Image (cartoon, rainbow, N blue to C red; front, side, top):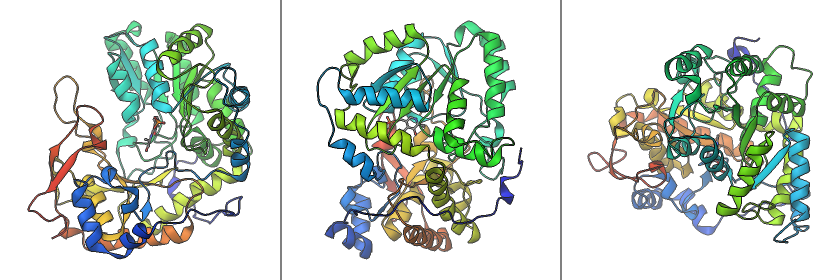
Length: 477
Ligand code: F0G
């Protein structure tokens, strides 16, 4: 295994497409790009939370790579073939076949997006008092585990929490931590092991096949099923292909298939890898779980042959699944993210390394060392970047981490980050150059950025709607 991702040399990889249609920015967006006063008013009105900005107030939108993908001509053509029958839509059968071809799971339950699949899986598998080991957390996955009565437990390797570690597989599970959890609470309290591909909150970091195989063996020994969050599995597979011995000549498609073969089921947000704007699913090999999930999806989502998606959405996703596993597509997609990361690293800006698959993460602890965690440094940094440039990123630190459901105390994660997530196929390298310049400018004047006070929050997933005020009145003094 290449232990040192640091020595990978950066080289441009061009994408396997040409641009045929473009989305014009609105007049308001162009004004926002040119007018700092407008941006200042907008971010103040949004309570210094980039989630509360209107799209017309955003110039370059790196809030998320979720549902912001540009679809291909092939997918758009498929949209015209949407069969909107309530029951038995032919697009459902196309999707069913695509999921079997690409992932290899026997049974599919479509949902309108990823968190609906997480809800169903959590409600079906978790009993109150359970413990769910995870390689870090994702916000929605954890909240559904907790709503079902489980305690979320982190069993990721220590390096996952270290933004400066160049470990090539920071998404790996620490098997010793898992073993000690099993020893502590007993195997009967662990309904499944939850493992996320290309861990979002760690910075878009992959697990290795070697680690997954070892995990599978350990879980087999205890009879614990392994449930995957396959939302960004394709990007994880790309890193395995690049960094893990024995996989260089294997295709991303083959690697995706092999990963799934070591797991019992998956929840997927189709809004990422699958190159669509909406959609998701749960898939598994266990017939009983499938039948229960199928019975449940009709209560919350819609009939089991559409699960909250229209026929055309299912067709676009079925086609996207075949496009997403093309080696050159994934390589160019990750390469564009790495290009932005590379520009920032060259300029000495603190970012999470290795640069991840879907986003560049600024390390707010090192970027704004003068702002303590209780003054929400990542929130302040994402607001400051918007104010200076019209570029929208998002907080991934203490605000996203929320409060402990038992004690009500704020969770203080080691990682205090701003995520700049890059939509697939939507932006050019010129946009990356612009964003890098904007970040470097904020970095050069970082001492002037002030901390925030939270003035409103919701009980769950507070980062979406929380509001803030700059301490001392001005975000940038
Ligand atoms: N799992 C992961 C790893 C995710 O990143 C997301 C969504 C979900 C599940 C939930 O899927 O949004 O379709 O309901 N992540 C988005 C993001 C919101 O911006 O990272 P969903």
